[in-house]
Image 1 (cartoon, rainbow, N blue to C red):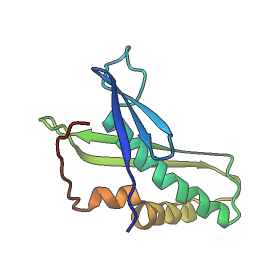
Image 2 (image 1 turned 135 degrees about the horizontal axis):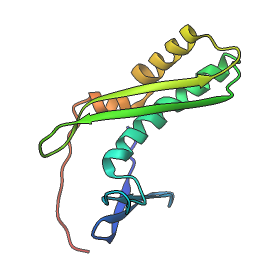
Image 3 (image 1 turned 30 degrees about the vertical axis):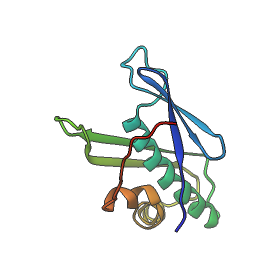
Image 4 (image 1 turned 60 degrees about the horizontal axis):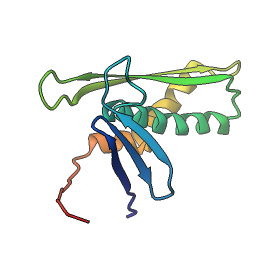
Length: 137
């Protein structure tokens, strides 16, 4: 079992930066448009799911020697009206522009990517335990 960790540090009341162990950073904010400069935590969850599923789908298509001129995934989530406003459903729409890829084979690759290989999708389906504690430096 491997462990990953990030540190999320406050920059301002509605602005944070998340850093992983290698020092890569992601800006996070909770502003409404037009002040929004970064993704919210819930946006990042959709981005994580789309990114995770995309990597394996693209690699599998390339392994099949298919030409990819463009690729993207549109991820949309519906949230609970109450608090917490968690996602109740998420839809992923995969789009590939390729002169030699057939829709059926791309659909199979996407299904494998999302249902078998994507760690984020598996995490969303799993019962995850977590703890929290308060400490001073």
